[in-house]
Amino acid sequence: MGRTMSAVALGVATLAAAVLVDTAPAYAATEQLRLDFDATPTGQVEPGPWTSGCFADVATPGDSGCIAVSDPGSISRATRPNGTGSSPALAFPASGSAVIQVPDAPNLNPGSLDFTISAMVKLSSGQVTAGANLVQKGFYSENSSQWKLQVDNGVPACRIAGFRNGSWTGILLSSKISIADQGWTFVQCKRRGTVLSITVGANPSVTAPEDASMDISNTSKVTVGAKGSGLTNNDQFRGELDNAVFSVG
Image (cartoon, rainbow, N blue to C red; front, side, top):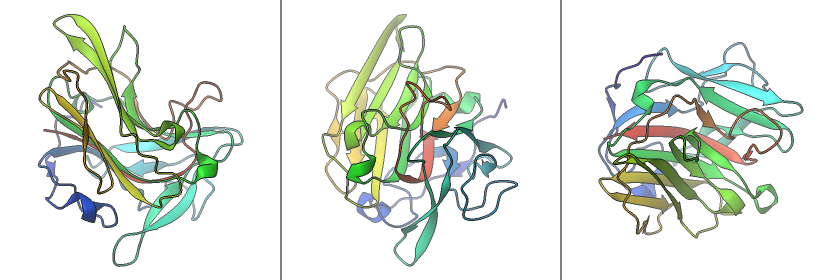
């Protein structure tokens, strides 16, 4: 949609508090995408299941993320505690596929700038799969670039790929912490200069030993909950999710 950088700034709070309440983690950045899933998707009724409709992007008013599925996939309403009550969230399908897709835009490509990806996630041991994408843009291949937050085998990890001095490079950073059966958990991946780190809940951050400086720019959609809407090689997430956020700076 040719968006420029939005001006919705993150607040400052502790990571531990962010596990339950709707506050930002402890860093200063500019939100480019925030899907809080508070409203009902357009044209739909609560509590689902939904196979179409769009959620507003709170960070960039007028933009949205829209549901795409393959039968029997759908998305339904879930809730999570937020410290004072409950907050609307989403439940992804136990079978079939369902994804939320946000159109490509320049501000969703960090290039060589610092960036942060975060989400609130709940996953039972019965929902753990070998591939489970939370939020991503791009693909991990030597012809492309990518930023991605995933929870393969129940373990949050961050994967990035891009180009440095004309050569392709990539990093996969695992938190080595399973969140299966741990309730709602805040997961955050961030790049600051040459450093890539991942934080799970109130646990200490894990840092990649590799140089994370690279240009990450592509024309792919942002996808939430899966790689796409297909039924094969889709890395479908089967748990519950809230507050998918991408920030630059």
